[in-house]
Image (tube, rainbow, N blue to C red):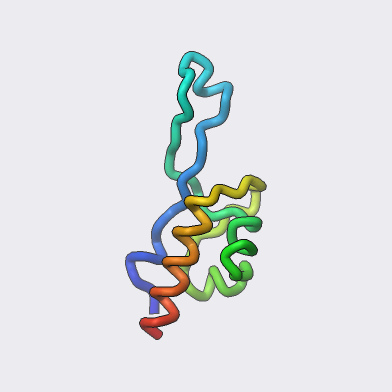
Length: 81
């Protein structure tokens, strides 16, 4: 059972080279959640795919706001099942 929560994407920082002229941190929508973020939230890649959560295997960063979002999504999806 996949809901609209599972389709949410991670929020990532724009690389420095692309924001050279900006002094503030810019954010954009990412391809998916990183593996360290999944681990921190207590999920495996297989669990994420079963729940319909997008995974970006190339990213290595871990952002706390994405971990919180993952915990919320996993909790709500498990309650609905």
